[in-house]
Amino acid sequence: MKEPLPSPAPPPEVPSTPPVLPMQVKAEQLSAINFYRIGSEDVIRVSVWENPELTMEVTVRPDGNISLPLIQEVHAADLTPNELSDAIAQNLKKFMKDPLVAVIVTQSNSQKIYLVGNVLRPGAFPLRHDMTVLHALSLAGGFTTFASPREMKLISGIGAKQEIRKINYYKMIEDIELGYYMLKPGDTIVIP
Image (cartoon, rainbow, N blue to C red; front, side):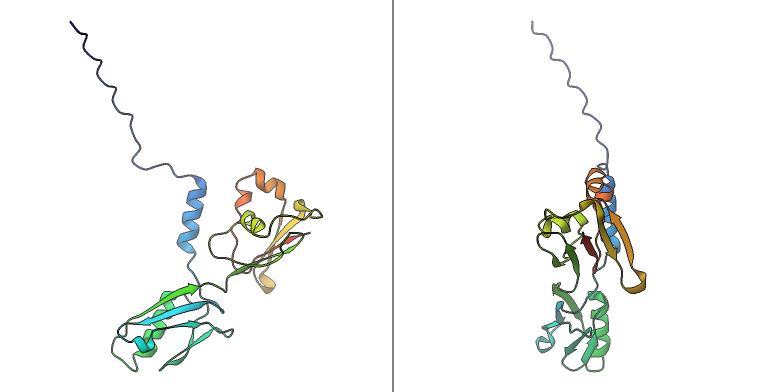
């Protein structure tokens, strides 16, 4: 007579949601509050439903405005695409009933960060997504042989509201929290 097979072990309990790591929380929080603001040199597509003559791509001029048929000048800089859609629709109401307007950023050229000093490729770099100091350093090709990585500075803000943080590269790569300084448009990293 054959011995009965042992009954299978019950499946392990699976948590209803996967654990959230601290860096995931930070990234989710940043994405939730980080709405794109249109700036000069951005290329945007303005679509007006059932009006192909009003549907076009335009570049935001240095003064922050765009030019469109019928309504001429519209201020676009510092607005989100939804806010600009609403502004264009309000202006078009003088000429048509309930215009449906959509604005899409097709090229983000306004948001930049800057690396200066002892990196292989100093200069301005587009800020196209959430970017950290480490990402920026890799875009610039890393340090030159004369760099002082222990004495880097991150300069954020404009004018009197500038904030300067000293960053030690070696401490930054050892401590994951320090290594993930999220960059904002206009930030400058100085490598002496």
